[in-house]
Image (cartoon, rainbow, N blue to C red; front, side, top):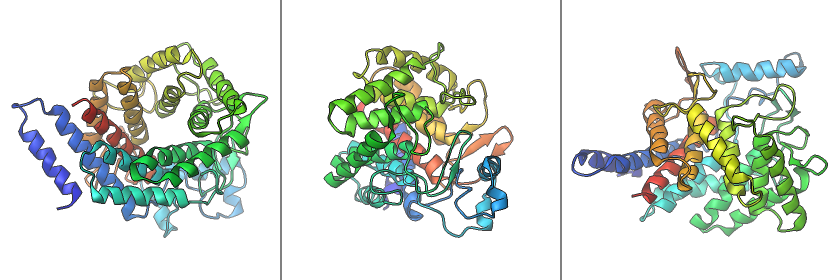
Length: 407
């Protein structure tokens, strides 16, 4: 019997005992493990490859279509906003986005670590995902990035350029899983990513970590992802410690009176959303001790994060004050961040469980994939391994580990 079937059977058995024991948390833990495993299996089936909302520039388009920032943005948004996968019209093979095997491999590692008896199948899946990640040198032998050209509202950088966000998620996954899977070489590879961030992305005159080597804009979630990575895995020297303190201070100084952080510091970057707020809070938890203001900043941030980006049903909101769209990336990130905060007794476990149960029952399709986005009149029907399945799988695994710990 497959691991998925076994977990489904255990889930039903746990549910059948309701009324005899308080099995609510046990049922949810088993269901989350099963759903996370299914998402990891789906990633393995496509060799950790798949379409991405923002991969519109993956192919070489005629110059007329991509000649200028606005036209590149339009092409990217056409792919991201289409309810159907228009890539099927012209593309036969998708790219490997390192963040996908990073998140799915990290999810496998957390499931393995939380089990008394390790699943051989799950162990193999995690090994395959993380070995694929460790061996990926498409952006050089230090950092990780996207295989397609990227045009945002504030910068452009070519495919194959490493950036701090993908590098942080990749390195964190390898470092965390190295002990679980007995792979010290993964920790070495992760440390080289942190060293690259410390060496090439810190802006000494401004005191923050840049998003990538082609921009000097301050993006707060990227700055703190870089700071946390360098703090935990970077070179152990005075210069590195000073850079981490300076970068942390820049984002702490930018916290708004309501407890949130703007996306960045430039015209047009004043917006606030759910999953980037989660990135900032998660990074600050890892940076605690670097700056004495961090505990109070986390406390203020958690209040608004829980109140404004999740509703009473557990629905994760992409934007404050807007019911739609529902977004799997916000839900997956939310579960991972809230689980960390619950470990620190900063949010109730019941709140975390509510988000997990809503995501499990409302944002997972019958085929096991996570829903990309659901609007008022329906949901997009495209499966995105990096944007949706990876974050949700890690979120489910994180909450399952939390519930197992609290049993």
